[in-house]
Amino acid sequence: MNRRDLFKSGLAGIAVLPFLQTSEIIAEKQISKIIKLSGNENPYGFSPKAKQVLMDSVADGNRYANPDLVGKLEQEIAKREGLKPENVVLGTGSGEILCMAAIAFGQKEIVAPDPTFPSLMRYAENFGAKINNIPLNEKFEHDFNAMAKAVTSDTSLVYVCNPNNPTASLSPINDLRSFCSETATKVPIFADEAYLEYTDDFPKNSLVDLVQKGENIIVSRTFSKIYGMAGLRIGYGLARTDIAQKLKRLRMTWLNNPSIQAAIVAYNDLDFVTESKRKNAEVRSNFQAELDKMGFKYAPSVANFLWVNVGAGMNDLGDKMRQHNILLGNPRDGWGRISIGTSDEMKVFLKAFKEIRG
Image 1 (cartoon, rainbow, N blue to C red):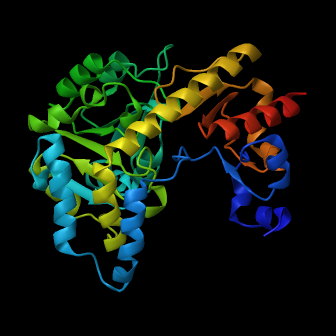
Image 2: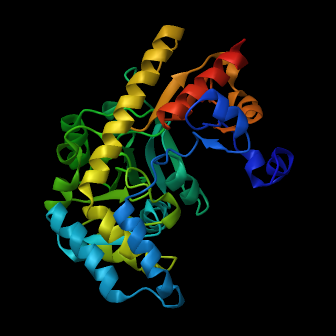
C-alpha cells in the first residue's frame, strides 16, 4: 500500500508520526513504514515467551475459549492482587470493562475529570447519561474537592483515571484513596489504572486495597499497554463479588484461547515488564530533555506518553505529521498527547516537529 492509498483508507482520520529505525538515512528509505505515536502502545512488542505460546496455540483457533484457561488467568490475577477469582472480570481489553460499567452504572450522571480518557463516558451517553466534567487542577491532577462537590443524588458513577490519560499525570495516592473511599459510600467509583504499571512503586499506587476491603469500587487494568498486547485484546476489572458478577452478565464478546494463553505467560514474565518500564523511562527522559531545550512545557509524566503544550497554532499538528508518515492525534487547545516510542522513533519525531515549526 502506497502513501496515497494509505490515506484513502481508514487511517486517513488518524494523525501520523513515523518513527523509522536506526538512523535518519534508514528512515528515509523506509518511508512506507508508519511510526505510531497515537495509541500509547508498547513499541518493543510483547513478551517473547508469550509470543511463542501464542504461535503454538494458534491451532486452537477453531475452538471457543477453554473455561479452564479462563479460570487459570482469573486465578493468576486474583492471587497477585490478594483477591478471589470471583473478584476478577475478564474482557477484550479494559475497553470492554469500561463499557460494562457504563451500562451497569452510568445511565444517569457521571462525574469525571477533564481532560481524561473519554471511552466510558461516550459509551454511557448512548444510554442517555449526562457527563459532569471537572477540570484538572493546575498540577494536572484530579481536583478532588471539586469532584466531591459535584456528586449529587443524580450521580450514578464517578470515573477516575490514574495515571490520567491524556495528561500522564499521577494524582497523590493518599488523596485519591481518601476521595474514592469516602465517595464510594454514596456512588460507585470506576478507577482506570491502564498505565499504572509504568509508575514507580506500582502496587502502592493502586486502589486495589479498596476492593480488598469490599468497597464500592471497580479497578480496571489491561494487557494492552506495558504488556504490549494491544492487538490481542485482554483486560480485566477487579471488584467485590456482587459488582463483579453484575459486570460479567454484561460481557459482550468472547475471549479466545490464543490470547488467554499468551496473557497468562505475559503476566508472569516480569523481566519483560521491568525492561519495558526501564526503556520507556529512559527514552521519556531524553525526549523531555529535548523539549526543555526547545522551550516547550509539558505535564509531569509517569506513563508512556507526554501531554505537551505544542502551541495554540498547532492544533493541526497531527494532520501535518501525516506528511512525515507519523501517526499522531491532533492537539486540543494547543496541548497534544505524544506516545513514547523507541529512541530512534523519537528522534524522527523531533526532526519532523522542527521542520513543521519552521
